[in-house]
Length: 230
Image (cartoon, rainbow, N blue to C red):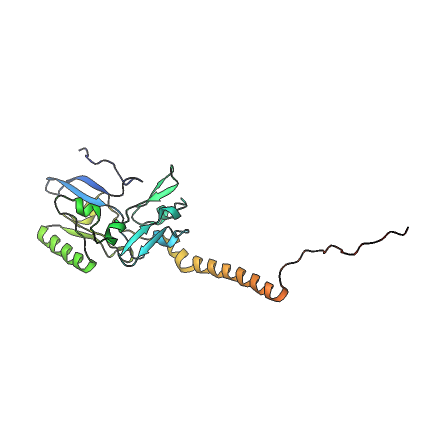
């Protein structure tokens, strides 16, 4: 079977896509499965942890992971760290791009653009507890193998799916997303140690200044003139 999906994955200029899949059931029936993909907006986002410039941040008011592109240095650490493989790097601009849940719209009491534009009402927006209830109710209405995805992964997300089939049926989904060990080590051990080391350097420099004053040239010029014996 072919596919109608285009583009095949997220792009620097495509923050959200709908995955399409032909699925053959155990009974031999063919179903079309669809799934939205965009940033999952993790509470403890790995991309935020590893970002050295502060370009990525967690907005505690909106429960979203935002991106200040002006601060992005194109290091691609977030690309490697994201357990859902969401951020996309553009070599033309040397910047990373991803969905920010339309932070500017939310700040103005508006729905995210994808929710506003959806003609069937398949996308919903609201506080997390309400959305969890909506998701559970919808999965129950669908019945059969309907399942939910998100929320409980990697410390919690603020985006979730309700799908017609079990999670493992979807070929393009991250079935057991995990934060890379390198990110955990960086957050728990290496980053605090690096800050401690940096603090030690600053502290040592300050102590030296207090004890010895500002640095002086190794040799002072002699202001007295030496007269020749003439």
